[in-house]
Every structure is written in C-alpha cells, then in structure tokens.
Length: 199
Length: 199
Picture 1 (tube, each protein chain N blue to C red):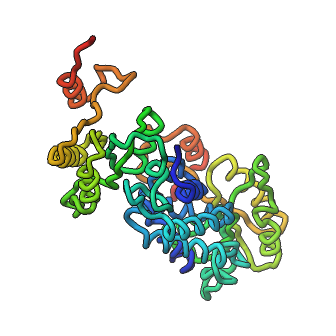
Picture 2 (spheres, chains in turn yellow, red; picture 1 turned 45 degrees about the horizontal axis):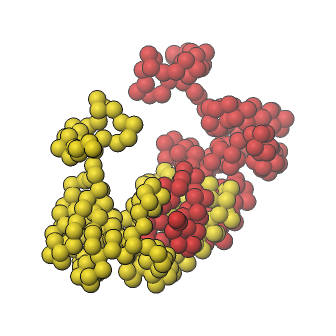
Picture 3 (cartoon, each protein chain N blue to C red; picture 1 turned 45 degrees about the vertical axis):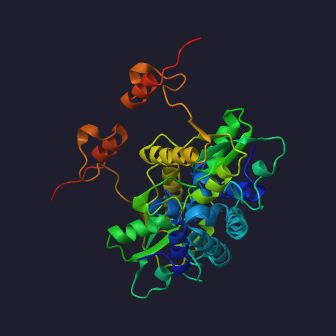
C-alpha cells in the first residue's frame, strides 16, 4: 500500500535534495500540504525562476542571475588580489569574517578524478587567462584543508607559478579558543611546523 | 555582503520546509543549481501540481488527489472497524505492519489548544457522523503515546461512548527486542499495569 500517485511523486521529487531521505521527504510533504501551502507555492516558483535565471558570473563563476556578480562588478576592490575558493558559501564566509577587498575565483568544487571532476570542470582555463592577463599579483588559495582541497591547492599553486603570480595559502592551525589537548594530531602538527617568529 | 537577490530568495523559500535552517537551505540551493537542475525543475513542478491537486479524502481526511482515497474506495475492507490515527504516515505504518483490513480516520494532528488546534481542526464532526451512522462497531484509537496524543485519545473515547461504539486503544508497553533494564519508567509502568493473563 502506498500513497496516492501525486503524493508519491512529490515525496520522490523532494528526495533530489541532499540530506533528505524517505522519512524526511514524507514529513516535509505532509507539513507543506497540511500547514504551509503558501510556502510550497512560493518554493515552487522560486525553484523554477532560479533554475531559469541563475547562472555563473562570467569572471569568477559565482552563482548569480546577472552577467557579472556584484563583487566582480563592484568598483574600488583590489584587482591585484585573487582568492580561489571551492564554493559560493566560502566567498560569503571570507567576506563576512575578513577585511579582504580583492576579487574571487569560485571553483565550484575540488579536483576529484574519481567523480570525473578535473581541471575543466573547475574552470581552470578561465582562471589561467586571468592569471595571465597581468593584473593579478597574488593568488590566495583558500580551498578546504581536506585531501581533495590540498590536491586542488597544489594544482592552483603550479598554475600560478607558470604565470609568475605569487601563490599563498591561508594558514591552518589550532583554531582560536581551541585547546591543544583536544586538537587532532594532524592540525597540531600543521600548527607546529607552520610556527612563526614572534616579533 | 549577501548572495544575489534571486539566490537569496531561493534560500529563504527553501526554509519553509521543517528541519531546514539557513545552512541546510544554502547547501540544498547550491547542490540543485550546481549538480541537479533537472531535479529542481521536477521538484518545482511536483510542488505546484500537488498544492493544486492534493486535497483530503471526503471520508477519512487522508491526503489524496481523488475525492476518496484508495483505502476508502477499496471494496472488501471491513467497514465495521475504524482506526483513528494522527497522520497519513501512521496509516502507512499500520497498513505495512499489521493485517488490519478496516478503515481509517486521519485526524491530521492532535488536540493542542495552545496552538489553536481543537476538535474542529481535527474534523471531529465528520468522525462523529461516521460513528453515528450505525456501521462502525469499534473505534481503534492509534494516536501517539504523547501528552497530546493521550488527550486526543480520551476525547475520541468519549465521542465513541456517546454513540455506543466500542473504543479500544493500541497497547503500549515494552517494544519487541527491548530490554526491561533500559526501557524508560513510564513505558515499563504502562506495560506492568497493562499486563494480560497468559492462557
């Protein structure tokens, strides 16, 4: 015994979202149909509009409905600095936490040959032409400190080297408020070998 | 700094779903736009169709796009048995696990005066007319064993009594495979006082 066809179809469709299994999809479907049809209608419209309208920024690959995103389009940012990140959320994190006023390049993923994600999928040729046009002095590599993020960072550093652009990577170490005793060994070892002279 | 207006609108709209906060909504939006636009398009259509098409079964209040749900419309079920449950998922659970061949009444919630959910919101008048039409011999109350579920169960039992319909409630006790030592006190006390003569 199953639900009616339309309800089953809704539950199946909800499962296209990451982290949503059968039970969550059921719960969401019942909630929307019982308590929030207005929200469901709005979500439906927002999804359709977004799929239709949102593409990538022509310069940095950020998700945007405009031709260039508002960071690339902004005046007064330092075009000699370029920061490579894995996802749009990382751009937000850097913007919100740091005073960085340079530009970004959003890879939309990391190198992962097993999943078929190579340099082409990450828009490396677009990055290369930006590194080659003579405006960029430093490429700040802010990929995640994971195996794939590290591999991507190496690739990016090589690319920068080929175009005589200085590459740097954001520091990895003990997070503020963390205690040495409870930090994992890899992080501590990173922090130890990455020590800096106190001046 | 925020995302582009359309992307922000999508993220906000995704938050109408229960259990989805800001971070999850972001993650879902990026996933759909980056990796599964087809899924997003389908979800949008399914939501629109469902909101438009799915209503309640005229007899049992189950969610369905037809006038009566397929359980109420089925022939060969025992119309003298009526089982009251809180949600459509509970109907599925009872159907899948038990050999029950009677009909259902889906309350779509439980009594919760603080949230403004009283007998009217649970369709009690429709239930009353079914209890009063002389076909139902037993009302099986299968609301959840929570405070609100218990209150609803009492209300339902009263209603059945008024129409001279026998009311029963599904047993609460130690779940199969559970160990007495680790079962909570309330459940164990329930199981103890609900003991049955072994024959």
